[in-house]
Image 1 (cartoon, rainbow, N blue to C red):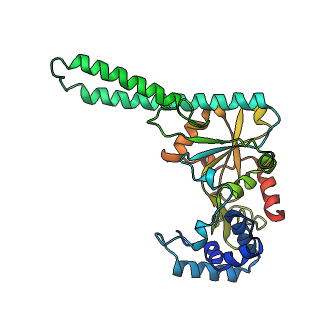
Image 2 (cartoon, one colour):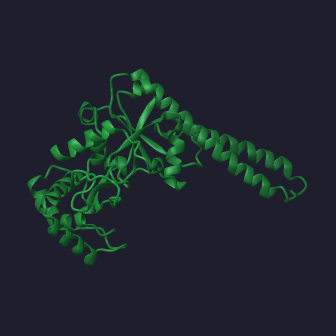
Image 3 (cartoon, one colour):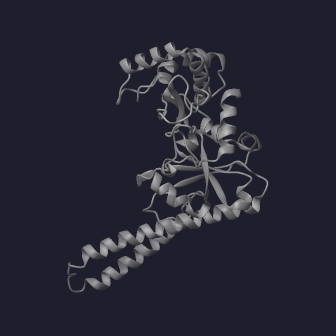
Length: 311
């Protein structure tokens, strides 16, 4: 685990805070640790950072609290690299249509990937000569393989991998709870709220302020005493009330790399582009920085900044 002043503080304080709030999950307790971190003086934060650099390093064992349970572990430990979080439950028809288009986009992406693989196989096998009498056997094997493949596709479970080839890993898991309690917890959720439920809080050095950039009020999601609160975990997509009409979801950033931007910033992406973007973010080396310009959703940023200091 990477050295982090928040990890150092959590290692020292987790058990005591957990004893005060025994019914809260791991992420909620770590947020309470984060709240304590931001009340420390600059010198105390620096001392924690020095302590973490002394005791922590790449490849170091995870802290004891890392194995503590959390209510959303079942979701966050799935194989899909992205999670679509439904936060609006007012229009079932629009939601169903949105998920259908997401499934279609994922199936098309999987089909394209399969075609590439098949093309490579054909190219590599073009120089090989099959033995006499093998054609009939190969045709039978192809028919059996085709039937097995179709059956496997039909047996795929869950929303996020419907229609995808068994050889292509699913990309986005759909979190759409049925229980009234969970729907209340997710209803109208902000980007920061989603990050705090489904991702792990980390404190890291804040982006450096350019010499020609204006100063900003200190804030834990941007920069305070040279540190920034960030979140690590799955890529989060938020289906909100606007999604019912614009067919887009909020793509949430767990960190802010550009001075002036903030952890939890988002922009809206059309459902037809979500899977392609997720594939690029997961394994294609894609980053979204708008060429160094601040084009994130300002209203959502202000909402996050406000919630971070009051909740």
